[in-house]
Length: 374
Image 1: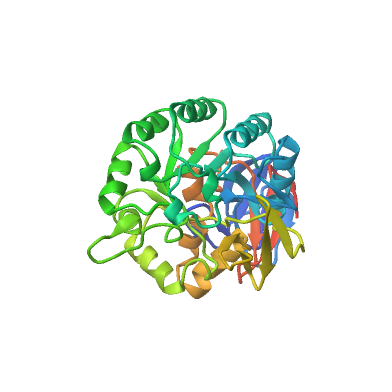
Image 2 (image 1 turned 90 degrees about the vertical axis):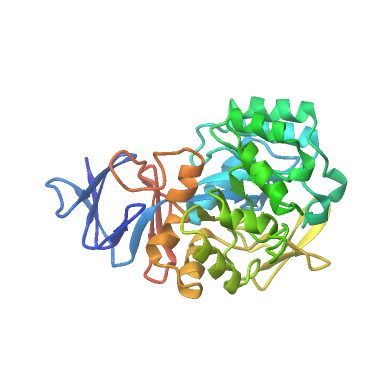
């Protein structure tokens, strides 16, 4: 039996439709209409926006769990369930710099998680980074890519729904980037102190994304534009942590003015997401949660205390981005980057992953595969 959502503006992935009726049938969207079909079950909403389920490509943890050396399929299930209740109905659980043994464990857990609601693949953020831009990553584990590493990653890409790998140009050879890209890996540049020329060489080899733009990368200088300059002047995607802490509002405005396409939102969240925890442990180090920040004890930022609805609200209310563009940055754009044409939009044939946001972009309700989660 079809279901008709009425009473809210519908964002279809590109355009806001006022007074539209969103129609679903089981786990699928069947389209938009102007009237409610006879016999449909009606879900009546009081204003706000219906949007595609949000897509988060950088999720380090949630529900008290981290992607780490203890990760198994149950860990990933808990993280996915937690984030569905926070509005992100699809995500890439993210492992930061780790040992080869931990990387292998997480890849195995990811393969075992295929079919878990919300699990879209994995993001491996490191260990092939630049220690000069380590952020909260353990410098003792950062290293250059070897042939064995390349073989593990290309094999994983063939078995996972999607695989994103963040790396620094200094830690890989162009032919390694090319091999990853040819295997279907989404190569993202990050934690890198590279020059513009080095970034451009990596892009030419097949890199097509930048990880948390502005953070842990060579900044935009007027004579040496660095990785930020490459990301803002080339046709690659770039994730952004829009909490107004990791990146100043003025810098976010520069990014959206420079790039009309390709920018998307990430939470970069940690184990505390969806909990009231005030601290947790990351690689044996204590991470403190206070005033919307997650930091090491020395004050270094260690991920974000952020949800994608909050990031959308920041982009609209603080940065001044039009609502349709901000919503696309958390839906259609990341879905397209990982090649999921069934996600990130609310047109016929899409999965019925849906969020209801208030007019202030606060999360009000969530449906995943047509089933209510919040």
